[in-house]
Image 1 (tube, rainbow, N blue to C red):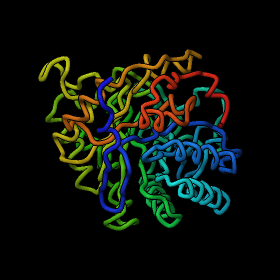
Image 2 (image 1 turned 60 degrees about the vertical axis):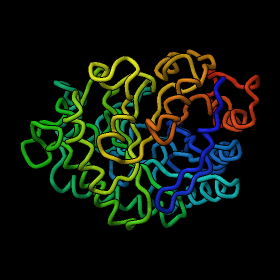
Image 3 (image 1 turned 135 degrees about the horizontal axis):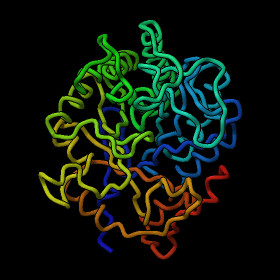
Image 4 (image 1 turned 45 degrees about the vertical axis):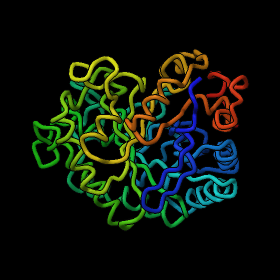
Amino acid sequence: MTSTDILFQPFKLKTLDLPNRIVMAPMTRVMAPDGIPGPANAAYYRKRAEGGVGLILSEGTVVDRPASRNEKDIPVFHGDAALKGWAEVINEVHAAGGKMAPQIWHTGSTKSMQNAWVPDAPVESPSGLLAPDTPRGVAMSDEDIADTIAAFASAAKSAKDLGFDTVEIHGAHGYLIDEFFWSGTNLRDDRYGGKTIAERSTFAREVVAATRAAVGPDFPIILRLSQWKQQDLTARLAPTPDEMTSWLAPLVEAGADILHCSQRRFWEPEFPELDGENGLNFAGWAKKLTGAATISVGSVGLSSDFFTAFGGQGSKQAELDQLINRMEKGEFDLIAIGRVLLTDPDWVAKIRDNRMAELKGFDPASLGELV
């Protein structure tokens, strides 16, 4: 296999100083009882830090809104008990020499993929829609929007105060921020809606700007984005580079330092009609168009995408040559690894130490335990 040295080059941006380019992708575990992370959660993250991950992104942890989560045991990032739990998480990660960001989140009008649990308050979204022509919950008022923006900023400030190294805002996959981006779920006729992706990005820009104001100029902000939605895997917010620029550039100007560009398979080109079947992926185009640092993600080191995991399917180990080639060309700056780290917490160390024969694929049994 090609040399993996590129994966182990340091990365520095503002106060964030990473020993390598490998990021643990955020993966919802639903294993924080009543939303409060405990010793098991702290041990889980510490084990990945011990395994050599450069930057750990937590599972989604929700902001202080009445219906911000769609599962009872999704962790929250507000209130004394939860923040005390998160303090233990970051202390354990730092003790193992790791770096970490919480991913702050609002699930919008989406449903749980696992059960029928619903919050006590009505679910909220831009226009009271789960998907195009699919009503669910209520449309957010101006006051709801203002309070939600403030809740994101408050959570980010708490992350900085607790000693986290950076923070990620979840703006992807059909959750609240993404529901504002998507024309199918944002039918508003006020300044948070509009015919263009630039107009529908106003809510996200205000979340990022408020977060920047809360954490100051030097604390890095990561923003996770996607074209696809869980409601529609074929959805595209920006079908051309010009539209992608009008979507992403203002978010960078508002204060996002790193764009975490989610796609199901990192090797797929974003605009093959322009640069061919081996063209730049989403993260590559985002970096080219905005100049921001980017994280790519999508079935790295595995033979199938993550949706197969929900059907109980495993995935075999796959070669890394294409990833290494793209990173050596500077297409994107960091690469996020997901499922394989659930099964093999030492995956990064094994790559670093050239212990390729010890690498494992993904075992779906890993989804059922926090180890």
